[in-house]
Every structure is written in C-alpha cells, then in structure tokens.
Amino acid sequence: MITPDYICIMARYNVWQNRSILDAADALNDGTRQLDRAAFFGSIHGTLSHLLWGDQIWMHRFSGSPQPAVSAIQASSSMICDWSELKRQRAATDDIIVNWAENLDAAWLANDITWLSGAAQREVTKPAGFLVMHFFNHQTHHRGQVHAMLTAAGVVPGDTDLFYLKV
Image 1 (cartoon, one colour):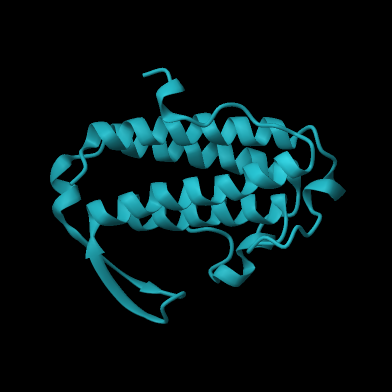
Image 2: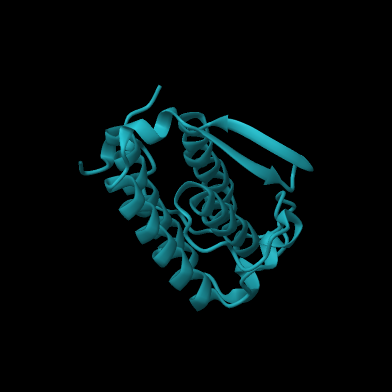
C-alpha cells in the first residue's frame, strides 16, 4: 500500500504547503481571513483551524500526541481564534507529524486502528496504512479549499505541485 518513505515525503509536503498557505494568508487582515466565504468550514481561518484539528486528532490516534483542544468536529473551525496562536500550533503540529513520519516502523502500517468516531457516531476499525492515506488526503483537500479562498481574496499562494518539493 504505502511505505515509510512515502509518508516522510508527504509529511515534508504538508509542512511546505502549510507554510505557503499561512504566508499567503498573512497578507490579509483578520477580518478578511475570518470572512464567511460559504466554504464547509466558513472562512479561511475556520478551514485552517479545522485542518489543524484534524491533524491533531489523527496524530493522537497514530502516535499518542496530545488531543486537540476541542473534541467535536462542529467546534473545530473555532478551536483557535487568534491568528498567531493558530500559526504557532500549526508549526508545532507539523513538527510532530514530521518526527512521527521519520520514526515510523513499516510494521505499524499493517496494524488496524480502532477509535470512537464522533463523525460516524460509532467505533471504527481500519488499517493504519489506509488511515494515513486519508490523513494526507484530508490535508490536501482542505488546503485546496483555502487556496481557492485566498485566490478569490486576491492573494496567490505558491506552487502546490508535489514535484516542486525538494526531496
């Protein structure tokens, strides 16, 4: 399915893209970042807060790192209201992801992970490798939404193509 090397590349891609999105969003004021743009999580800020929440909850499941400050997906878009704190926690979480990826044992990918899903309202069990693919796909999906919102707001983030990543 996937390998630790693939996971390390995707962890580095995640850092690179988060920095690009946050740098672009820095060009906007808080009111513009928080403006409801009819996205699933409302605003640029709300979507980035949800993305951070998702990364924190999956890393908790994968590595035992701390859980996000809120447990419900419905509260994820307002988990962190301060822009500087959101950026600080984003960088700290990206460090956790890279460290986890760099120390991942290939055998771990063959295990199942079981958790109580708030979204599904039941216990779920899936293969770890499958969930890691979901983890990175979730990041890309929501960053794509933010990229579109930033572009509509007149700010253009950097390249997103994976082949531009320095490996």
